[in-house]
Image (tube, rainbow over all chains, first blue to last red):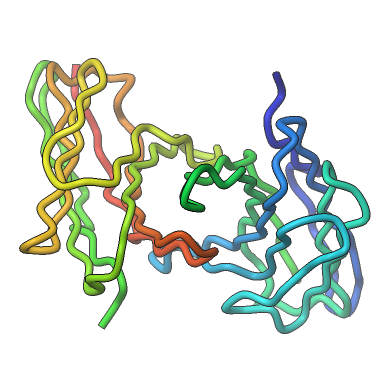
Length: 115
Length: 110
């Protein structure tokens, strides 16, 4: 069982370039999330989705876009990359249980550097 | 005020020691709490989660929640070098807001 798979593992972008970070999960989870992790800052929510065709902004959505066409995939798009987007990006998923509560399951991240 | 405050560490202990990792939180609404372990260059890995006050044990790990003082702890017994990692505490309600601490770096010295 692969869980949450993120590709690529590493990427270097030049300022102004664009790219898509891929995320796929095989746990049939409806809920998926994108976080960024910066040193000393904790995890910040970028976007999330509660099912195919439904997405919503998190705490730090500016400069990013998402789509959710299938239950399994939740790609994150960076347009016009900026140095402030240098970070480690984590995709996560969960399946709410009774009462709606359930923990997040994370992928191993994509390390992005924008220079 | 941050939603979750976590002791920053770093923490260094000898192998076999009991480790105590701590967080405080600021909201009293319905909560459930999680502890994640994150190895270098890896994603956070769920260790434990709990809804209620009191202790929850899983092998060498015990999660403790004190809702009256808004305090959560993770205890690691008989610590091993393989426990060396960053530990993240988190809390959530039944919605989509998860609040993470900034992590405590732990090194267990053989």
